[in-house]
Length: 96
Image (tube, rainbow, N blue to C red; front, side, top):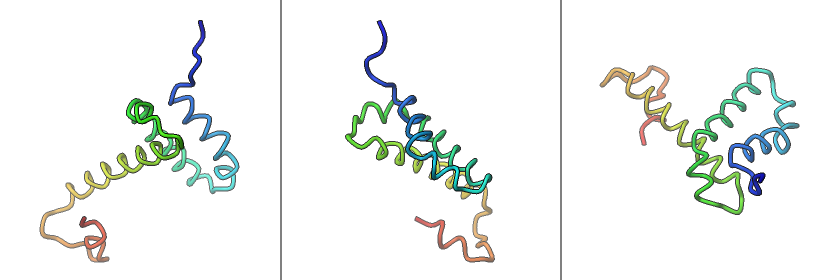
């Protein structure tokens, strides 16, 4: 028997290619790669997103992307020397 329900990973791939395909093609090559990376981040959270079963699948996709971005931001913050503020004032933007 075949699957009757599309897996969340398949759904993300479909949305990436079909719904966001024209947008992606309009981006510069380096930005296309970043968009692809964002959708890859969403796939890391496929199980919780499928479990959430939201009517709009972009909601858990975007939340998954945000979680991965926050993880990366925290890693960068951890690497910054304590007590040193960046010269461009970026520290104020990083504090939550």
